[in-house]
Amino acid sequence: MNKVAIQGIEGSYHHQVAMEYFGDSVEVIELLSFDEVADSVNDGFCEFGLMAIENSIAGSIIPNYALIDSLGLNIVGEYFININHQLMALPGSSIDNLEVVASHPMALLQCKDFFKSFPKITLIEDKDTAEVAKRISENKIINTGAIASVHASQLYNLEILAKNIQTIKNNETRFVIVSKNPLSDDLALNKASFKFSLSHEAGSLASVLNTLKDFDLNLTKIQSLPIIEIPWKYSFFIDVTFKSIGDLYKSLHHIDKKVESIKVLGVYKNQMK
Image (cartoon, rainbow, N blue to C red):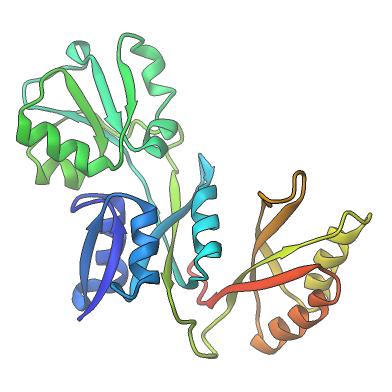
């Protein structure tokens, strides 16, 4: 049975994605950081890793782009889920009695407007949504709340004090599945992620984007990332969808002539609705 590494524990959103994407065909390995997830795949301990990469409210998770790139991992799939955050605490608790609410930084960011009405509550960043819920339950921690999923509240016997507290109700997160090995070319593959760096010449980025258009590639994401070794120089991470894998490779060949460097991070199947 293949192993898939996730950031979080049972009841986390990563665990939900693992179950929906892979079903019972894998063994889920619970880890508490994205670094550990990436390392477990890079070291060969796990065949796959699952990493949140962007959220429709909070934007891109920049460090995860850097992790995938620096370790040379391959994106072999993606998955989208709606994220509905619940405020929970020990049974019998009330929001008025909460002194602290802890959760993953992304969850806190997505719910910050809700807590403007409760200024006495201190928000604390933690490693995982479900892990906070489990800790509160096992240690019977009073006056402390967690932001996590409905499944986590059921799993760890916590009471939901407020439902769907995220700022924007249509809150979706994109996850990517990474592996050491790329997928073999297949007619079902219709999305690619790659990275390139440019000179500071005027129009250099526009030239790359025009090449995508020339080969009928649709740009679905562009994200700049600083090149640490060179101040004020950036790499660009982009996602494109395509109708023909031949068009993809032709476009990459032409782009290679226009950029200082280019690196394919993965070719996989588009799951965007």
